[in-house]
Length: 81
Image (tube, rainbow, N blue to C red; front, side, top):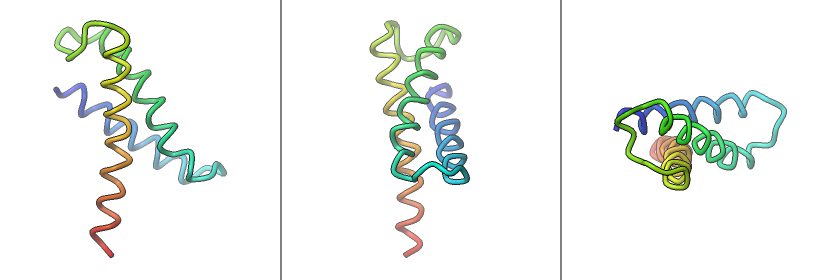
């Protein structure tokens, strides 16, 4: 499960980098999801305890983890209001 948490952290960092770039912030969830998908497939291939054994499931786990980073960021912002 640590691999899944790592995907969320890396995707969150990608989202933070997009905020600093000239890209529109509306692309952050898409880019976090794509980054998570790629990291999910990479995790399946490199980590023996990754919670997926096929490409589709690994990509789905990665996408959910990437989008969770976006959701966690928004929860933190909404709690401050």
